[in-house]
Image (cartoon, rainbow, N blue to C red; front, side, top):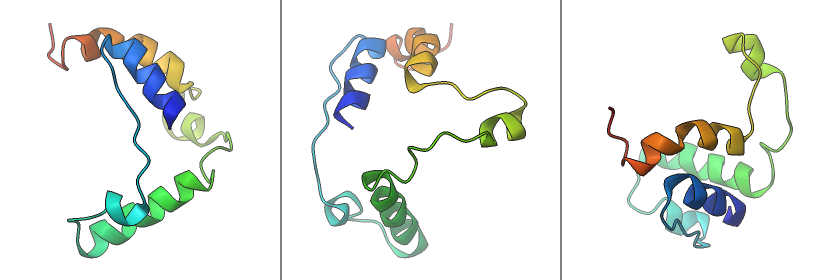
Length: 86
């Protein structure tokens, strides 16, 4: 997560910080299915459950997966505009 914040900061042209929080803190205020799914996802992220590179993106979209860095390089202009188009 700290590396992700670094990459986001570079792409957005403004500071993005990472703050360690517990899963319980992260899902505070959520209820029911949304809370359960968010907690499960965060637990899997923290455990490295999504680190493995697979061919799923390419099979679903017909295009190879990209790194976060590559995605943010392409998305940087929109991020620097605050998401506004044009």
